[in-house]
Image (cartoon, rainbow, N blue to C red; front, side):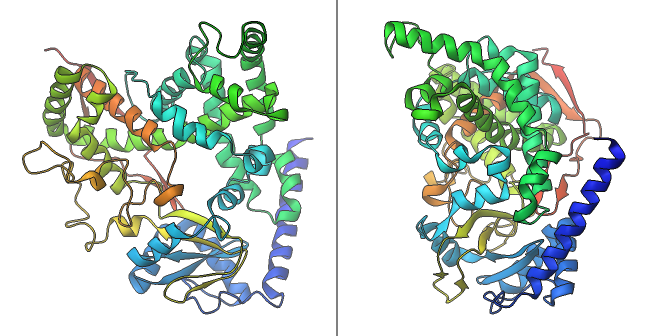
Length: 480
């Protein structure tokens, strides 16, 4: 299909999507959320204008809702629905406590990431990989020490470090395999955004025409099929616990997968899905922290002391990482300042649900907790606009101020990882990965921004934030 034909088709699909959208707005019975105050216009035609505004001003609109209705709920306009946002300790606790058959994280994630079209229905319907991430991955945390410039290179490093645990050597060092995983990660995010611009009726067609995810899955099969088939051969010949069996995520998947999930393509898709989750969020987190450190090189000495003390006591071990208290506080504060964006803990109502304050959520509606506004609320954090790297360390610097202030701990006022039993299952692995990288960085390099003291401005896409993608950090190997 030529470029002109593709453009015409895309415009036609968008026009059709717009017609269907307005038809839905005008359809009777769409007023179940009428009692919840809205940010932006609510009239049928004008609410579409509000949804367009939300694409560019989502951060400001969520903050406006938080300021007006703190402790309660409000709704913001998305292209094909209203999205309810809850605020305050009480309602966030309600959201945490809701059972998955009432408010579902899995169903919400599946829709927002268009999982059926990007990662595939099996990832949505059979989540056997989640307990593996919670259990085997957390128990087998490995410490690797990369060298770190800015965003694009950080993504390369995160990919290599993570795949040392996911598929092992030598594949984790394969340049084309790493490039594939980064392209897949970016492709899923872009594909989900494009697909969700269309009503459900047109999403399968949009997925086929406008994404490269299927091509990348086939490319992944070429990389991993020989490894998978050889491991299956060894398992068949010598048993499931054969000598020299790799202790990595691929082996754990092969041990747990049943039926069709034991096919090469299905196993490859699980590994790519795990890379998607790991590369995107961890790269963003580390780059935000890197910019804070490079803009404030005076933080290097306290961090080096913290790392040196821990390694002297425990060596390069997981126990040492647990004792790096200032590193932990620094990364948690960076997360507080720059999490995933304005919203977190997104759920889809599988049945009608009523919050403790009487806020009614009808079946099929989406609800989230406010993230950024919570993290910058003076009632939760004194001098909340200030980046305080040691905010969570005791005055003597020897203890984290309570277990609840560790980087991996969640609460109603720290929700970057979510909160409760559906908090991010990979946060323990991610935290140790980030701490190990930061420890190696501060011991090995002097770093700074070209304009000292200036943190590159983060980029917001509606309600999502990412570190500045073009900023550069100056590195010099330490002389002493």
